[in-house]
Length: 238
Image 1 (cartoon, rainbow, N blue to C red):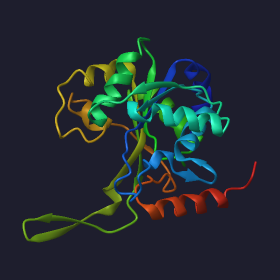
Image 2: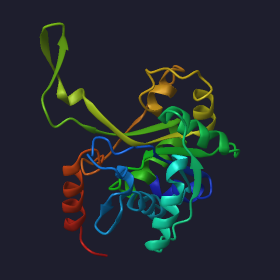
Image 3: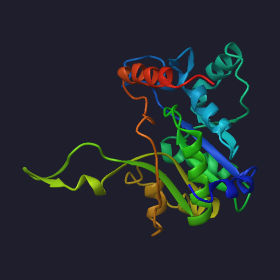
């Protein structure tokens, strides 16, 4: 993207990434939460943190994890000699409360904050950088991809075709100027808050989209691990 590199030096040390890892593994049919499942020899979560560490923006990393799993995570870091620096915080009752815990921890002003699902380990560092750059310029940046499938909307017992060229599938990271995100998360929680964009939008703020990749899949079901491994194994080695 034009102008991206010129902004990157300004983003270093002025950006944060909140990695939300609240999954319990129920849909994975596994006793182990999906963020800890092995993907090409190491936990999914490690791939996610490494992607942000590899970005030119070099954000300060905050991992929000249910307190019951802090011990397990520390053990895994020791076993895998995982050295990516990050702060570990306890999660809340919902995703909203987990993100709020991390936002409240960030006392810096005029910084950028990205929020990312721990179980999207294939996020591209280039997309991460583009999101920070866009948020710096426009206040928000939500990674999304155009729908590849035909889309229909149901009303009662009927359905109607929608123009898929105007339909975007939302991913993460979702990145914002800190003042805007902090203000948004002062709102009382409602079940309508499905992601960070919906919280910010409730304030009446427009959401800017950043084009992502269809490979930025969310590990939700058992077959997703196999798909993610196939994608990783297709990448050229460094």
